[in-house]
Length: 354
Image 1 (tube, helix red, strand yellow):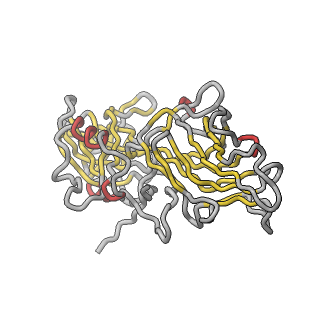
Image 2 (cartoon, one colour):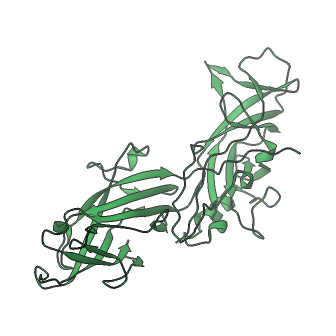
Image 3 (cartoon, helix red, strand yellow):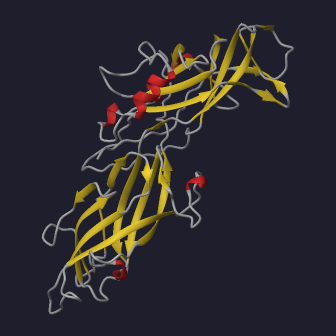
């Protein structure tokens, strides 16, 4: 399991853009490009999942490489954030005096040392950049994670008129691109597991492990290692957490929302017995429902459940079940749970001038 977060870009610069064609000298041999990175939001992060972990970023704004490509997807020029200025009105990042050849854009970044992607070694075309991102598995170290986004570049208009950008006495046609920059994986986080009515039949249960998507297993413990719900304790223990500032988590390839299975032992003692004499129990989470407003509404089925775990989304789950959700392995009971969904965003930085 990895820990990392991506939060918002914040750079300050000045650029003047004109919405008519009356100012300065028009230069149609070049263009300005305004880039809107849609996941520039208030800071958010994936919660850490190891003891003593601090906030760790997999990508910073200064790591972003902007690959401007022609219609065939071949790289014309690569830039970084230091080559851009920030429009004080829109908050977009604007690159001036760009070649008229460019018609599409990719943004890529990683935090790796020797293999770090920069504007001097940027992928030679869009497809290479996409493939670097697409083949990466979620289990890479945090500083090796590649984030990627792409868009076409189109001439901007306002009120039916072409928009121009005026810089240092010259005016360029202003083109625009909208890009979401994300890793090629989703993340599931579980911050708490609780049994809301423990004590009705089961006095004490031990959470042994969790298995997600039939592949990823987290071994938690048994009756002697602490992951125990105990209705007979004072006070009663009916919920467990991974620890302060920590979660149980998986970084995963995008997939159809899979089952999450809790493997439980029902324990006996203090004069009471397991209801049916069989210790093994499971709780199966089969569906996930957003607990708030979910921006990607097209990713919900007719019942309002999440269809797929999408790249760049963090699914944050407080898992509360009832005794009636616990069943023998041969049973087929399922639980629907509510999840919070966060978006990966870009790490904020402020420029420091010497």
